[in-house]
Length: 188
Image (tube, rainbow, N blue to C red):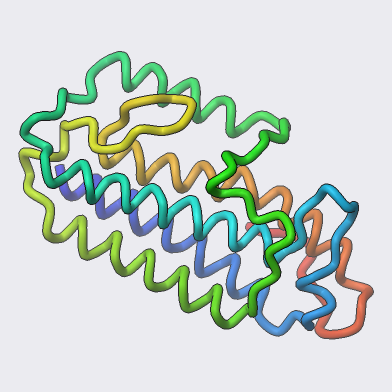
């Protein structure tokens, strides 16, 4: 079962690498450019992704300490997870939970890159160290979809990044004529 976890993790990591490759070299003005007052800039989108993954991992790690007490993530988790995936594929904007809202936060790009790498390394170490018996357990509680197992949580992270890649693609297109290195036109 860990093989599926590693596969999900590697897909997630490829997304991060691609986003950072396309974001590197952008000027601070490009990274901070905001299409509208209530919209996020590139830094805020990246910070949101990192914060969401970090909070998710912390929840998973806390749950893991008592995983033998947790229920298995069964068919209802699979159904809720499928609905969550469909929801994230739709061209709808969702309000971020307050704890993952990055409005008004404009960190340094290099710090974000470092933070994201740390979170991903922690996730990889967790996968390596977790007990096989924990993999069916409801280790993660998504704010809307409820209880999920570890593989579903990692796949949620990937679908969450996919959801924001569209937003980043729009921002990259919008900032390409601002001072600094031209932004890429699309994410692949």
